[in-house]
Image 1 (cartoon, rainbow, N blue to C red):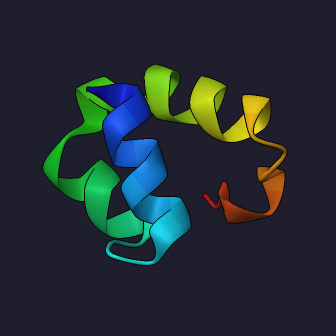
Image 2: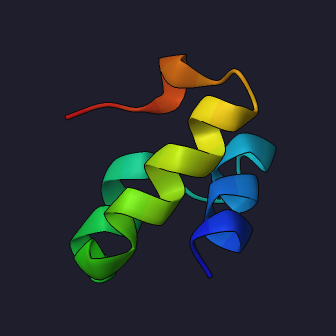
Length: 45
């Protein structure tokens, strides 16, 4: 699920902040996926 949401963030469907407010349990998976894809710029805190 983290990879799916990470891709949705890359696609622009959701923002990183929005997803983490709704599903903070996915943070590690989303972060890992975004890093794998070279999109560290989308990881905001």
